[in-house]
Length: 299
Image (cartoon, rainbow, N blue to C red; front, top):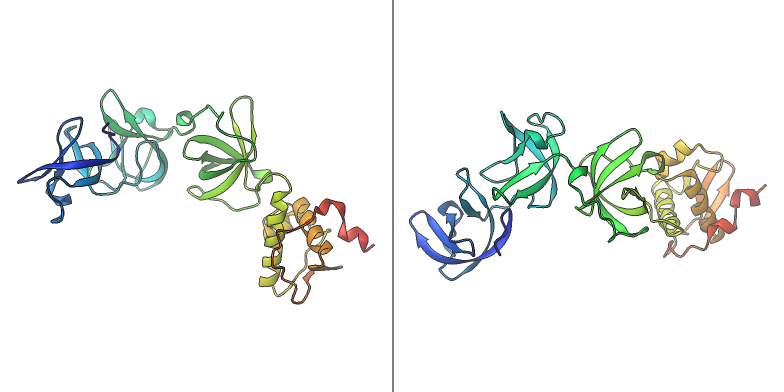
């Protein structure tokens, strides 16, 4: 079945003066000459993007848009008209964001996060800036601890809002996020909890002890970069630890405990030092650090 606003594999049916006609279950679709290569022949199967032109006729192109129907993408506002805003999405015909689908007035040349949608009644592709309202509210396919792809949507006082797996909407709490993120960033994250109201709480750290293993790697790498010593210890402020290691003070102490127990770190009164020649082959093989408080053992 032909999918408008997506890539389709269509067979070249005939050649005309102004392009190639491609066969589809919706009838013939024109691939204009500007997109036709000398290598294309009748009977060939071509992968093309199909959408409607300015006269609402189905047309094919070999150009690659910045997204297809269902995708969340950042697009630049190009032109304001009485009924909406046109966005540059990499094709000859710009993508319309109707006024009714805007959260705020969309001004060129700013970029906005858009979901590309398809209107079955008009067979037109359009965009919406109402992101959370157009995300899937059914989270039954998700589970706590699951790794997901995040696209940062907005920054608020409480948290960082993100599109999850190009489908859902969730939030990273600022108090639990130790990495600088900006709108438009893509990163990996984890499901921290699925709430009864179908909202999703996210985290950048793998839940449970697994995150501490990765933190051990981080501490060793930063120590190596700093020449083996960093003036950070159990009396350092949470903010100082966050700025240097991008982790909470609790996680820092747990990870340092594991590294100390393995003899990788030496604890000095004014900081931590990587023992000479002690970069571990596999820092992830840490033992449970809660069983030891290295700073208490020195007192």
